[in-house]
Structures are given as C-alpha cells and as structure tokens.
Length: 240
Ligand code: SAM
Image 1 (cartoon, rainbow, N blue to C red):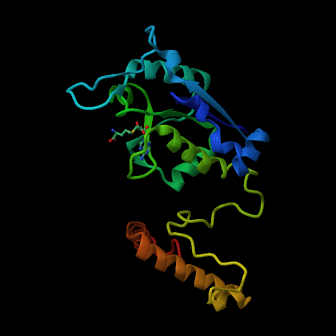
Image 2 (image 1 turned 60 degrees about the vertical axis):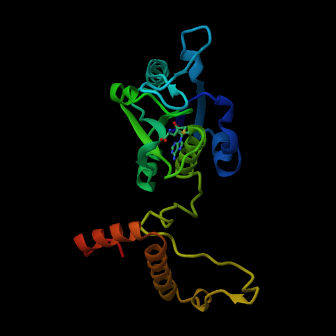
C-alpha cells in the first residue's frame, strides 16, 4: 500500500523538500509514499485569489478564511475519501509517536498548513479536521510542521527502515526515552564507553539500558516518567 499525503498549502514548492533526501527520498523513489501538494489559492474565488482576511474583533495579522479552506479540504477529501484530515496548529493536540504509528498504518493523510495568525475556527466545527501541534513553540507556517509529521510517518512505513530496525525500541515506544548510545573510538577526549557495553553480557547490557532509559526519562521528561509510572502501577505486569 502506498501512503498518500495531500498537503494543502500556500507554498506547494516546499514539498517534498527535504523529504526528497535520505530514507524518505529513497522511499519516495520506490513508490512507498506519494506527495501531492495543493495550492490553497486555487480555491479562492476573487480576482486577487484571497485566502485571508482581517481578524474579527480586531488585532494584528490576518486569518485564513474558512470558506476558501473548506473548498480545498472538500476537494482533497473527494479525492481521498476516508483519509484522516489534519491541520497543523499550535492550538492542536500534541503529536505523539502513538498517533504517528496509527497514521503510518493507514492509507495516508490530508494535511492543512496554516499561515498568518491561523485558521478561522469555524472550519474545525464544519469539517472533521484533527488539529495537531508539533510542540509548544510557534513556527511561521504549518509547512515545516507537516514535513515533521510526514518524516515521522514515512520512516515507519513497511520496508523503509529495513529489517534491522523496526523502530519499536526507540524513544516513546515504551513510554520512556531511549537509552544513550556510544560507538568507536573506545576512548575519546579522555572519556570511555561504559564498561558494561563492552562486556558482551547481553542480560547486563539490557539491564543497564533499561536503568539508563528510566533515569534519563525521570530527569529530562518528568511528564513522561509520571505517565509511565502511573501506567505501571495500574498494570503491574505492564511495561518494564
Ligand atoms: N497565532 C497562532 C497562535 O498563537 O496559536 C500562531 C500562528 S503561526 C504564526 C502560523 C501557522 O504556523 C499556524 O497556523 C500553524 O499552521 C503553523 N504552526 C505554528 N506553530 C506550530 C506548531 N507548534 N505546531 C503545528 N503548527 C504550527
């Protein structure tokens, strides 16, 4: 199955952009995913091809019009019926690895990229659109956020990472950050690789990695740690 991404944007030339390179680029060449950027302005009806207007209630900047965006979304939904429609917005639910896995297991996604101050809220009431945020900071447009979401999905498509790595040991898959990595040289600037990793004792290595994943998660991401511990208490046979 080919993962089909339709991207509704004012900057179609930004796609596939960096996703033409490396793992995602190879997968694109192999037809594992396809990318169809659609110019939102093509759905404007006035001679200036306007897609935005001043904010109701006053204030700075411009707001993307619901009527123009709805025509673009409807067009994409007609071409890809049943595919999830996502809008990139800092007001959305934070993107998680679990949601990425769900999306990657499906037929693709329609992704709406905002610009200016954002999107007329009535669009979210009138169409089945999932608002998605990639983090608590503000980008100048939704295109970079869409590229992030696509990259996260594409690497999980069957055959993209190869047999050696399914990605299921990585950060967030178990609810924890992943353990730290080391490689040669064995000594660098007076620092050595932890002895256990050179012991060849797989049980000890596994135990060390679990302990490191737990410590780093506790220190760097107390929010994840709390959730992980909560889940463990509720299901003592669960993750660990
Ligand atoms: N005024 C908006 C607010 O404070 O919530 C920010 C608008 S931002 C300048 C323009 C566009 O960038 C947004 O409509 C959205 O598409 C995209 N964007 C910015 N930050 C984002 C984030 N953290 N996650 C997803 N999309 C983001």
